[in-house]
Length: 129
Image 1: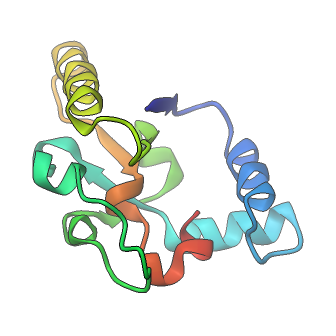
Image 2 (image 1 turned 90 degrees about the vertical axis):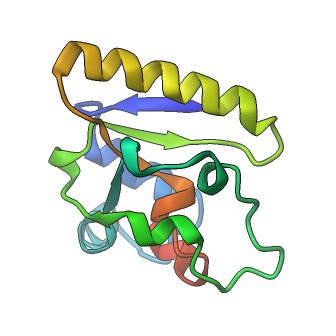
């Protein structure tokens, strides 16, 4: 799992999205699409069951975690978190919860993050990445 803290650049994220296969032709188009599709989740709403969900092999569904996410602006997000479904979820969960506890202790509030398992609709994966 990796965490990209806010302030490291919307343009960098847009560039990564273009590399990963976004259907837009420019960084500006990618930023516009990301602004419309951006979502976040407050980590106190996240359960281990949702976090450890495997992606649907056939794709084309809305993951259970999507219902706990909400529209967001890039400046509202505290971090971007992506994790691998090939790594043991218990270890990733423990790291995420340790980061969350430290964040809450330092800032006195829950982190609001983009988390792949909650913020990507599999039916619109190209748009949401």
